[in-house]
Length: 113
Length: 113
Image (tube, rainbow over all chains, first blue to last red; front, side):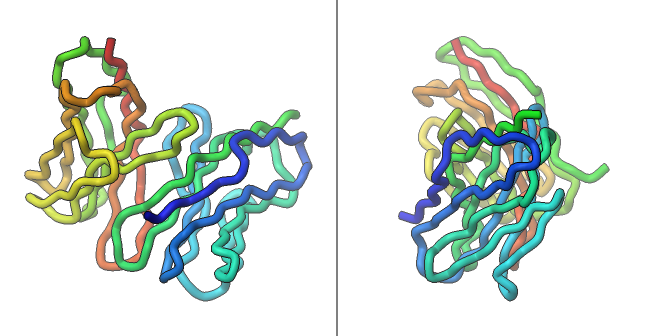
């Protein structure tokens, strides 16, 4: 069965620190990759997505992610976090033409001012 | 405003009662999904529907039922057979026919005592 692993359950950073959240998946075929974010009290919303082409994708609010096919990874990065980035981040994988999304367990990011 | 509405936001039920959670979308999406979110578990797929009058079981369908009589609506019933019904339930929708992202509703927090 396909699985999605997020390496960190809880990450605590100070403002202006750099962020990298890990995501690995187990499926070897064609995949579509997503990062979603859930701010406190808000809807789950899309941060960025990779379908094809340039493996470095840019999303909203200064986030980016790099798809490394050989490592089955899609890590999320931001050079300088802000207090408002405090949220839970979910990596998700869609396999080929299948409509199902498989989510990782999430990483809670706390940014201290 | 286009989007997904879920009602109610909070729902309380006694053990042994069935309860139906509402999900409506006005995005003209063909596909709709129900997820369950538990702390530290990420999102797990309960049921999904790619077209009206058709739906498929997800990874944790036991104790749940759905219907899809209208394109806009995908209600979820949590039956008394669900052993651990207390959770946060999220509804989502998406276009079909390509690698489209899913859009999420605000969720319903169900507490069963």
